[in-house]
Image (cartoon, rainbow, N blue to C red; front, side, top):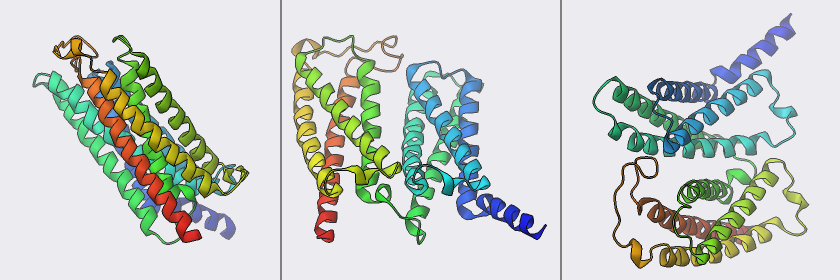
Length: 299
């Protein structure tokens, strides 16, 4: 009996410790956010569907993580739990941040003052709380001794998460604007986005599965070389996308509330992709600097 009691205490500690309380708040806030949005029936548009996916995904994975730590299976998982933990937390903070910005832009401004608008505002409020909770967890991981372990907890690892997330946003905008005249040079930009996204995702998967040692030579040098290539590719894509995506016949943008999910004019998504391409170029450049710094320190 004493042994069973100690095991029970160890399990409940996963929920009562500061990190466990933050996990419970994250699950609660995301659960309330998508429940309010579903009650409002304001999530049928593509942009609102993204928000619903973000909240449901974060809630589901947070709940699974709570169950794993409550049962004590994290040490028996076939992956690096700490790398997985920090990776998901970073993704969750970005997902909830994007939902907190996108949902009011899509839904709140299109609703007249009524109960439906109150639901939208409340969902946005709890989405912001969820984003704050995930951000607090990232901070706690980096300020708690012994929590920061593995490549994904380093700055290059966290920047890999940001790179893939921005690429996902870009794909969302691109595949919802393919009905425009598509210049051949834009295919090259799309290829750049896909190649860099896949390679960054492969690095994340290798780190989580603890297979980074499979690389044929020093992993830091390979990652730095890939990041340098990504910077050059993204710099090229930034120029090409801006040059070929705004031909003269599109110089006069027309607003159409029934075009592209009721919320965007003809220039909104191309401009958003251009800005996101530039931002991701800067992120890859920062990744390159951090990776080079790590190589210099280890040398």
